[in-house]
Image (cartoon, rainbow, N blue to C red; front, side):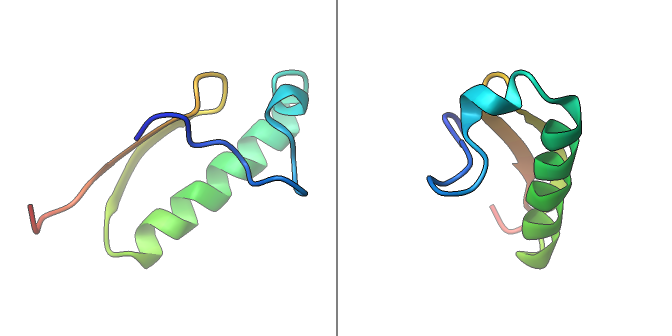
Length: 58
């Protein structure tokens, strides 16, 4: 998925470009959300807003 940025009111995308710790925390949250949906987390690129995951049911 493309252009997957943090929602307004939490971490702003431009702030994430500057703070590696925030990037890793948001990536961890994306991983948890992915696994909750029974999907396989592959990667999340904070700089590009690209979320990669796989599902068995497609």
